[in-house]
Length: 222
Ligand code: TYD
Image 1: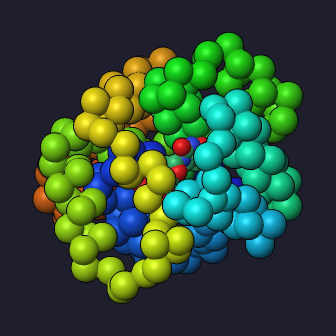
Image 2: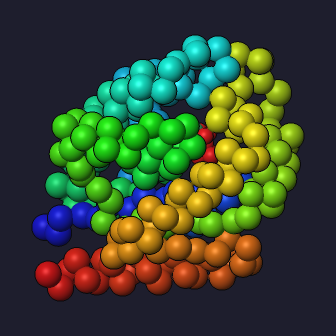
């Protein structure tokens, strides 16, 4: 049996990850692959509980290091009990955000040291990384406008339910985030596929599908 493929999607707010993730899942399933769709923070019932602490308005006012440790508590559970077993069964795992989000948001965004991130990443999940990461890159003003439109269209939630602790940060934070993601992509160019998310939805899906199929083919040739 093949060893599976671990794909992650990254990007700032309003980059259009959700639509593209769904499209890729459908196309891979149509091609006969077994796909597990998951997300971070979250993915397992236990990690989803930690997600509530991190992303909901009522989740608490965590200092940067506590926040980092909560992300990694959830991530370890997710990796060990869901992602690795699925990969061992030969599945394709598509994860909406993974550890690159931590480096972008917590380090580039909130100023946690990159050395701290790397040490914790090594200690907690043995620096486990996706095989391929799609970064959907969009200028900050376009992304924030898009994400506001999506939020306005969603059902009415109580104040406490709204998952916007990170979206409420100002545009200079989002600019640091965008540049952070681009730097991480440059530093890990063998794994990253940077997609210009200003292109049409169809062009974006085609680029993603091609890269994913090539990665599968490369894995099969090993
Ligand atoms: P989510 O609603 O999933 O955001 P999005 O739709 O933009 O993916 O909320 C997750 C939020 O958590 C998002 O703003 C990014 C942030 N985050 C971090 O700060 N660090 C991390 O390691 C991860 C995985 C997410």
